[in-house]
Structure formats: structure tokens, C-alpha cells
Amino acid sequence: MAHWLMKSEPDAFGIDDLAARPDQTEPWDGVRNYQARNMMRDEMKAGDTVFFYHSNTKEPGIVGIAEVVREAYPDHTAFDPNAKYYDPKSDPDNPRWYMVDLKYVRHTKRTISLAELKEIAANDPDGPLADFPLVRRGNRLSIMPVTDAQWALILGLE
DNA sequence: GCCAACGTTGGC
DNA sequence: GCCAACGTTGGC
Image (cartoon, rainbow, N blue to C red; front, side, top):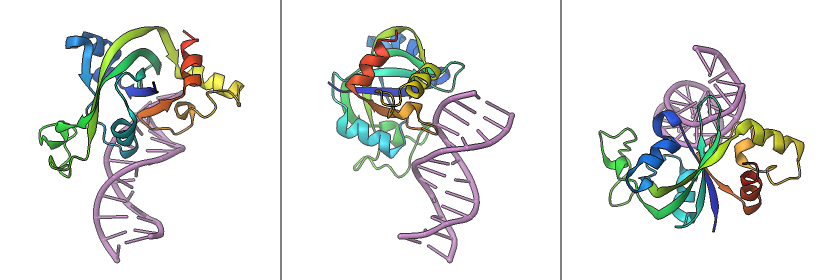
């Protein structure tokens, strides 16, 4: 089972919003980045576990865990001219954008902050977090893979 | 709110 | 196919 980290702005859709959804499940629509799309479309499998990350907030960090419950299917919001992430170049017969469904698993016991993860990476340059994209300067990927070692280390910080 | 980093667009 | 301009992300 693979692991992932997915970013969301809590002002737009946070871990509490996911927990409050019917069946605690939400389609992860609006991804308009090819690298992120490719990971969702080609690699994410049902049962994969996900660190839910809050970005663009006072204390950015990992706040919860979710699970992939539906594998990639076309993101229909790209076809809707009234949708926020409408993309006129995405054709229903040849969809450009995909989404998965995420289900809430639990909150982490505390926020595992970006600052803390960066510090660990800096103090252990050969450790599991050394090549974790999240702690790299200028990283803007909204979806990234998490190795087993990274997953275990981060969960151990709770 | 600033701004660095980076992806995308479009002219040539 | 290059690359400047532009838009977005996201930490601080």
C-alpha cells in the first residue's frame, strides 16, 4: 500500500470539512497540475493512505490521515463553465483532468508542522526526510508520494 | 502582504 | 523549440 501527502488550504477545504462530509468522503477535484494529475491517475490505488496537509495557514503542517476510496475518474468540474477550475480545453470525450475520492480516517493527535519536518530533515541529511519534496525550498507540488520510511517517521512524531 | 520559485502560455 | 511574460503557490 502506497502513501501520499495532499495539500489543501483549510480556508477552502480542511480536515474538519472532510470529516463533516456525507460518508466522510469527498472527490478531490480541482487539481490542474500535470505532475499531480499523473500521480492520481496512474499511481493512486484504493486503500492508499494519505497525509492531509494544511497549506497557506498560520501553522502549515500535517493535520490528519485520509484514505483513497475511489481511484481516478474524470474531474467533471473541468467541463463546467461555471466551475472555479473550468478548463475549456478538457473534452469530456478525452478528459484532461482526473480526481480520486478521499475518505477521512482520523485527525493526527497534533499538527505535525512543516517547521518541525524541515528541522528534522536539516539535522539528519541522510535520513528519510532528506529527499522529501515537502521540505525542499520552492516546492509547490500539491500531491506527493511518501515512502514507507517517511510515513513511519512522521507518524512516530505524533 | 511580500516575494521566491516554478509552471504555463504564446509570440517569434 | 526558445524564452519572456505572466499567473499561481505557499511560506514567512
